[in-house]
Length: 274
Image (cartoon, rainbow, N blue to C red; front, side):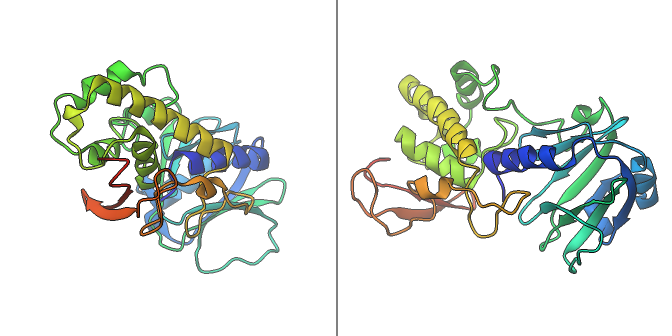
């Protein structure tokens, strides 16, 4: 599933492609992707004549800022946007098409059909699910060491599980939690409330640094991820533990381990993360 760096990369490329374009027509081939409003015709009618003024990100969600509405889109596992000309063919995995006045089309393609779209009146999107219960952005002033300690100090959850909770901090998924924990030298099965002050400080720093570096590299291409212009991310070349089971640790040479924490495959070094 795309995490913050991948979604941020998609956001940046989408702005280049669709900012300023006005929607003339919407075609929907898989109605279940549209979660709000429930009436598909209402969704389509509301978007006609709306101009895309900006594309923002909230955690792993994209926010298309329109005249009167905000379209909240979650890519989930395989969701992908692309800009096409009307004469270009599309396959059975293209489920939503936004047709613009300039005779181009923004197409949403999703092999797994897990993606979602919610349409809200502008200003109301943060008051309702799926955005209402999200925690702070990791690059925001609200995400401090003190905040991290306050949220983790009373939980008995394992640190890997706690960091995957989007109400704690948004944007982290399996890849970047594993990487941040490795860089901070913290075992993913440690109880979150039992970390020391120094460990909390190190973890906070490595969460921010890992995500910043991944954004700068366009995210990580694991399996099928590409940005809106079909370009792969490059941060996977810098991964220390994720996806490197039974390979030597880049830091100490110990063979890396994979286990399951909270139902998620988890990669770590038993020597560096005791």
